[in-house]
Length: 503
Ligand code: GLN
Image 1: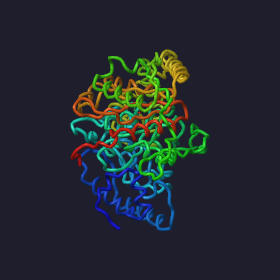
Image 2 (image 1 turned 90 degrees about the vertical axis):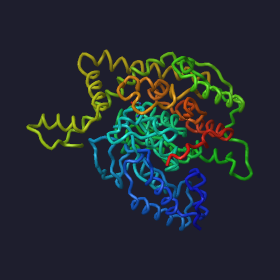
Image 3 (image 1 turned 180 degrees about the vertical axis):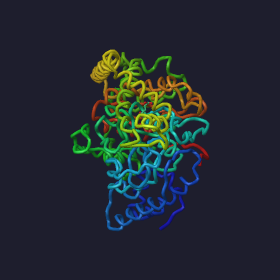
Image 4 (image 1 turned 30 degrees about the horizontal axis):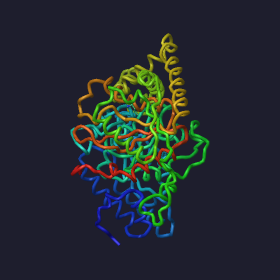
């Protein structure tokens, strides 16, 4: 039975239920979203191929017709363009990889395909995931659907914009220093970066390998839980940093307390007794008053729901910026050395000799930010500077991780803002890389520690722009984070708000 009811208003959970009940087919759902994607003005997509998506949808319909019932079967999504895919070109937002076709799918992509999800294509991002506003994409900036003169956040900006504008019910993202949480916050959606190693990095174009981690971006914690259950899990043969821990079902407990479920039982993640630690360094003058107001009222809601708020200390928070911006470029300079025009990447058309070929290919292929990071990275790793910068940064990284462990002896979850301001205007920080770096202040420290973190819509600030609440958990505590976010979302409707007329 066909339906013209607004399929794009449905959550992943509700779409999957409709598909499973036979109320709509995956081909119909996919066509509906493809129509929206076709007319999008947000610069969210870099690659679309309706034939590929519809073929995947047909295959999902066959699985449904054969009686298969899995939680994501037939539901569309799209992938950040740093996940390599056989069916769509993968550019990592860079001219270096223009029109690159991978001979294989990233593990996360194939796991979601096995779960029955239909890929609508590839999403815009900062070049090699380096950025905080999606303005470093070599193609075009993505726009924030709440105000198209503003950035959607970065580097997973296309993912955030597309989910917020309901072009897709969910997307993948990657987070090296905040690129799932920050765009989720600035675009008013939900996103989780799991513990480092939870999701395989195999087939993710590498930026900073000791930090890169994949995660889902969707409208609710429940939808993120459904996706993360399919994405996570060991991949030991192909990713040596993959955790040897079994995949977890993050969704069932949440569904048990979901309002759509008959015979509602007690929530599996009650907030009563939950101790939420607020790092004093996250609530200082560096955070804009409108953001603090929204974050504080979300925290008051948590108190109402039974949680206790306590102050904790993360004394090295400010150092997370210089530490990250030494370590991440160091790893990037090494990872990006493979793009030499021979083994990988763009090759210049005209050159005189081998050195000239390398120089021209790399200068033409890399944008300004990638070039800047390669230079910083090569510098901090060079003889004479290695000890002063790289090694020192590694030592402080360890201390930052230890500070979190001390904080977690006093609390279960750490909370605060994700970003010090709401989304800024496109162009405002383009000429000032350091201004972009400073905007990462609240996300970098947990990334350096390898901890899971998420962003949950928590209200609105200046210009009617969304504000996210950040929840940081201890290692492997994704279920606890998702549970705490879900309880909040059952009591509030910030995650249900949507931008007007963005498509
Ligand atoms: N904004 C940070 C950077 O530019 C984080 C990027 C990311 O998480 N991929 O490096």
